Length: 284
Image (cartoon, rainbow, N blue to C red):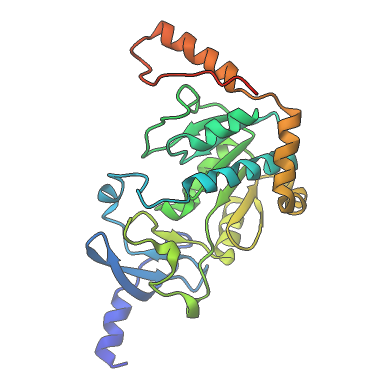
């Protein structure tokens, strides 16, 4: 590489949004009509875009029409939540779903009997109205497909651990440097919302920064804990998530009909406050 070219690349380096070290330019690719640079941190392994100045445009449609896996993903996440609650022995505890989208997961968890609540900065709660976060403490925070959206993942995860002692996240680990190209499917630059990607070394760095411990499946599902409770049990149980869901169904009572009755009372008190039609689902 010529000296002038090397200097140009070096000048593109940015500070790592996880550890503060200097990052290294790896490639550019189109994102929402502009050419965006991506960087790799050799210190902690974090992969990030340049400063994401396009996010307002990216969240004009919070959930893309091409997200064909949204229902399958939420079905899998129900079992993952049940497994995590069993691991920390809080099956009857409170769950807060951060980045809860339309409320699909919260509704499915409540149908199973889990006391789940919703929170999302960008999306409208359509399916779990009345079960938004009340600002209280929770036993488990979930953040499925959220971390890759965060401009400051360390501070955001710190805030989650202040809400609950255990945080269950899903985000795909970035491949090693030689395999990381603009063709990696998880970049989804056409949506513009994925701006930072962990490796296990990044997760380890974040956990140490936050004074907590973690367990991971080595691919995409990870559990952070302030006190380390349940990490070993989770590592053993996560291979049997389907069993955990079945056991949960037998141990808890569905909240579908009690939630329906609560929604009716709210609608009676505020007839224009809830615009969605409710329908009771009697068990077969």
